[in-house]
Image (cartoon, rainbow over all chains, first blue to last red; front, side):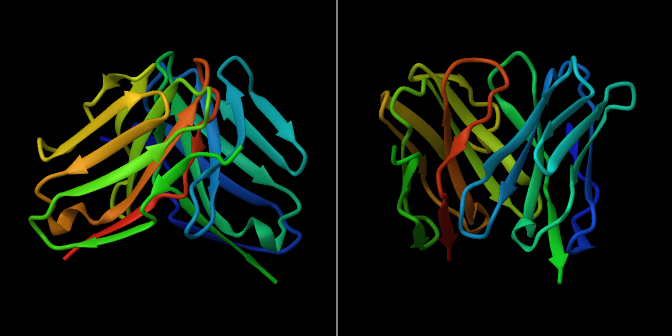
Length: 111
Length: 114
């Protein structure tokens, strides 16, 4: 039973437009949420995170929004660039050290 | 800093053979994690160590899988005997401190069992 769900396996967005990647979770004990980006033949790399006490965290073109009541978070990328084409993993952790990942969403940025 | 180093990058083996995957975490990181990536399940946590001690191995799929961390700079994941369904990309990651800070992942080992 997946605790972190990314229901869209893939997403295509025009270059320059906004990319929105969504994620749902089931475990209310999660207190930290993260997004990772993965290119082919490489390991995932940390992108941005948010604590459960916040509802928004911004870092340059990347913003993560957290809606605790809905157990939902999203990653906004604006403007989208060709180098953003990758697989994005949503992840969550509780007070334990381990991080639980979703299955990922493949983002294609179209020219 | 060379990052998390995994070897080999690719491994092709016959069913029934023993496979050993290796990981060198970032120096100073006290937690180490083994993940497996498949199309069906995404990134699954297999086991993790804190200060070289296994903390949670509930993700290890079967007794055929075992992991060790004999010291702070080395860990192995062994599959014996290997089966075709073990084919996947295996990632090692490490982190320092506690809490929700992100991990640093290695580049992974692509295992193919034929």
